[in-house]
Length: 128
Image (cartoon, rainbow, N blue to C red; front, side):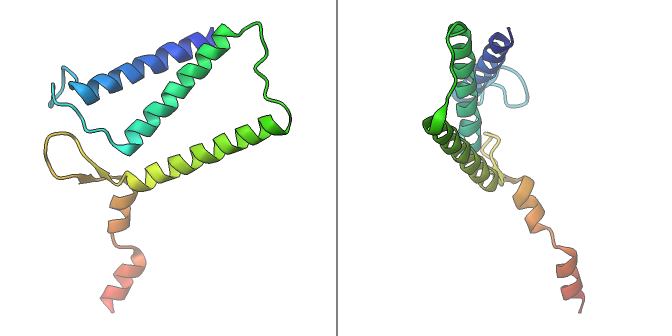
Protein backbone atom coordinates (compact mmCIF):
# COMPACT_ATOMS: atom_id res chain seq x y z
CA UNK A 1 0.00 0.00 0.00
CA UNK A 2 2.83 2.41 0.82
CA UNK A 3 4.40 2.10 -2.68
CA UNK A 4 1.01 3.06 -4.18
CA UNK A 5 0.88 6.23 -2.06
CA UNK A 6 4.51 6.98 -2.97
CA UNK A 7 3.82 6.60 -6.68
CA UNK A 8 0.62 8.67 -6.55
CA UNK A 9 2.02 11.47 -4.36
CA UNK A 10 5.24 11.89 -6.32
CA UNK A 11 3.37 11.59 -9.63
CA UNK A 12 1.05 14.39 -8.53
CA UNK A 13 4.01 16.64 -7.65
CA UNK A 14 5.65 15.85 -11.00
CA UNK A 15 2.43 16.84 -12.79
CA UNK A 16 2.30 20.17 -10.94
CA UNK A 17 5.96 20.80 -11.81
CA UNK A 18 5.36 20.08 -15.50
CA UNK A 19 2.36 22.44 -15.60
CA UNK A 20 4.26 25.18 -13.78
CA UNK A 21 7.15 24.93 -16.25
CA UNK A 22 5.08 24.71 -19.45
CA UNK A 23 1.97 26.90 -19.12
CA UNK A 24 2.23 28.25 -15.57
CA UNK A 25 -0.02 27.61 -12.62
CA UNK A 26 -3.53 29.13 -12.87
CA UNK A 27 -3.30 30.93 -9.52
CA UNK A 28 -0.94 33.16 -7.59
CA UNK A 29 0.69 36.51 -8.34
CA UNK A 30 2.22 35.22 -11.58
CA UNK A 31 -0.62 33.01 -12.77
CA UNK A 32 -0.23 31.72 -16.29
CA UNK A 33 3.49 32.59 -16.39
CA UNK A 34 5.73 29.54 -16.83
CA UNK A 35 8.62 29.22 -14.41
CA UNK A 36 12.06 28.68 -15.94
CA UNK A 37 13.52 25.19 -15.72
CA UNK A 38 16.60 25.29 -13.54
CA UNK A 39 19.08 22.52 -12.80
CA UNK A 40 17.99 22.00 -9.19
CA UNK A 41 14.30 21.78 -10.21
CA UNK A 42 14.99 19.32 -13.01
CA UNK A 43 17.20 17.20 -10.74
CA UNK A 44 14.58 17.02 -7.99
CA UNK A 45 11.92 16.07 -10.54
CA UNK A 46 14.21 13.43 -12.04
CA UNK A 47 14.65 11.93 -8.57
CA UNK A 48 10.87 11.93 -8.16
CA UNK A 49 10.45 10.13 -11.50
CA UNK A 50 12.88 7.49 -10.24
CA UNK A 51 10.89 7.21 -7.00
CA UNK A 52 7.68 6.66 -8.99
CA UNK A 53 9.43 4.03 -11.14
CA UNK A 54 10.72 2.27 -8.02
CA UNK A 55 7.29 2.32 -6.37
CA UNK A 56 5.65 0.94 -9.50
CA UNK A 57 8.32 -1.76 -9.76
CA UNK A 58 7.58 -2.77 -6.17
CA UNK A 59 3.85 -2.87 -6.89
CA UNK A 60 4.21 -4.87 -10.11
CA UNK A 61 6.74 -7.39 -8.79
CA UNK A 62 5.25 -8.18 -5.38
CA UNK A 63 5.70 -11.91 -5.99
CA UNK A 64 9.27 -11.66 -7.19
CA UNK A 65 12.35 -10.64 -5.30
CA UNK A 66 14.10 -7.41 -6.28
CA UNK A 67 17.16 -8.07 -4.15
CA UNK A 68 20.47 -6.80 -5.45
CA UNK A 69 23.04 -9.23 -4.14
CA UNK A 70 26.72 -9.86 -4.53
CA UNK A 71 29.45 -7.59 -5.80
CA UNK A 72 27.38 -6.42 -8.79
CA UNK A 73 24.47 -5.34 -6.61
CA UNK A 74 26.75 -3.58 -4.12
CA UNK A 75 28.64 -1.83 -6.93
CA UNK A 76 25.41 -0.67 -8.57
CA UNK A 77 24.10 0.78 -5.30
CA UNK A 78 27.46 2.41 -4.54
CA UNK A 79 27.63 4.07 -7.96
CA UNK A 80 24.00 5.20 -7.72
CA UNK A 81 24.61 6.68 -4.26
CA UNK A 82 27.72 8.53 -5.42
CA UNK A 83 25.95 9.94 -8.48
CA UNK A 84 23.00 11.15 -6.35
CA UNK A 85 25.40 12.72 -3.81
CA UNK A 86 27.41 14.45 -6.55
CA UNK A 87 24.37 15.82 -8.37
CA UNK A 88 22.77 16.97 -5.13
CA UNK A 89 25.96 18.76 -4.08
CA UNK A 90 26.23 20.48 -7.46
CA UNK A 91 22.61 21.57 -7.32
CA UNK A 92 23.12 23.11 -3.88
CA UNK A 93 26.20 24.99 -5.09
CA UNK A 94 24.50 26.23 -8.27
CA UNK A 95 21.20 27.18 -6.61
CA UNK A 96 22.36 30.58 -5.35
CA UNK A 97 20.57 32.55 -8.04
CA UNK A 98 16.91 31.81 -8.34
CA UNK A 99 14.53 33.14 -11.02
CA UNK A 100 10.83 33.63 -10.43
CA UNK A 101 9.79 33.87 -14.08
CA UNK A 102 8.64 37.49 -14.01
CA UNK A 103 11.61 38.89 -15.94
CA UNK A 104 13.16 40.40 -12.82
CA UNK A 105 16.78 40.04 -11.92
CA UNK A 106 17.69 36.79 -10.19
CA UNK A 107 17.45 36.91 -6.42
CA UNK A 108 20.16 35.70 -4.08
CA UNK A 109 19.06 32.80 -1.89
CA UNK A 110 20.63 30.26 0.38
CA UNK A 111 24.35 29.63 0.32
CA UNK A 112 25.26 32.52 -1.98
CA UNK A 113 23.30 35.05 0.05
CA UNK A 114 24.99 33.99 3.25
CA UNK A 115 28.42 34.11 1.63
CA UNK A 116 27.94 37.73 0.58
CA UNK A 117 27.35 38.95 4.13
CA UNK A 118 30.56 39.94 5.90
CA UNK A 119 31.84 37.53 8.49
CA UNK A 120 32.83 38.70 11.98
CA UNK A 121 36.47 38.35 10.90
CA UNK A 122 35.89 40.62 7.89
CA UNK A 123 34.14 43.15 10.15
CA UNK A 124 37.10 43.08 12.50
CA UNK A 125 39.58 43.57 9.64
CA UNK A 126 37.70 46.57 8.23
CA UNK A 127 37.51 48.21 11.66
CA UNK A 128 41.33 48.30 11.98
